[in-house]
Length: 351
Image (cartoon, rainbow, N blue to C red; front, side, top):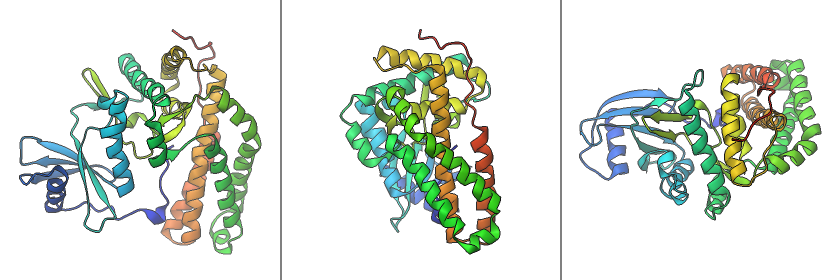
């Protein structure tokens, strides 16, 4: 589940004009010969621009908050090169802030590749992806630049797990005490969400012991390792959309990836990943431990969504935004009970 910011913090998502895009590009790339001839929206805040020049002929521009854009720059130009993985990350060309300073734009090379197919991934693509992710985890875990990543990035470590659950319970308690929210949100939904989060809290001490034993050391984690954030071509593979990168146990990324793949593809990913970490001398979890930790970490991500949707309701307890937040909470409860990182029962092999 991708973690989003609270609705009340979402900025104006209208695309800039071609002229404004051109001005941003000229500042970001420090060239005065760049103009935009066509613009295509790829996703929210992400645009493919065709230019009047031949070098580059097209780029991707992404709207970010300035702190995230700065972190993206550090990742592409400093952190990944430090561990020999410069070609595994976003092909950043430059960045520029809007005049108001509240929004930044990152400019990337247009990759002539394909997004990873999560339904029927090719075996070679699986192997390349796992090799990149495992190499990243192992290399950063023992590199001093991790201190800089920790300073700028999010924290997904052991304390963060309990914190996410506690935050969700605080938000649910505040909502339960607000008469405006109670008038628009079913009491049964609040109670069911509280029950789900409380159960996770009660099992947290045992889970954190297991996470400490087999979750892997702190390292740089992508933070949103969905197949849609993998782009591949002939002989290359890159991870994109690092907006939520941070520091945490390696299994945080592994669990995200496994849950976004069909069960038939998960075992190949797991076996190859475990081979990498075994070679690095890390503890190797069993299939049961991976399943257990993946379920818990996914529910912690959902707990963060509970917190933010409750904050949306506390900010605006009625109207279209409140209706959307309430519908999201119903979906979150369904997702909570549907988390299923199914893996083959056969013991994972380390090849």
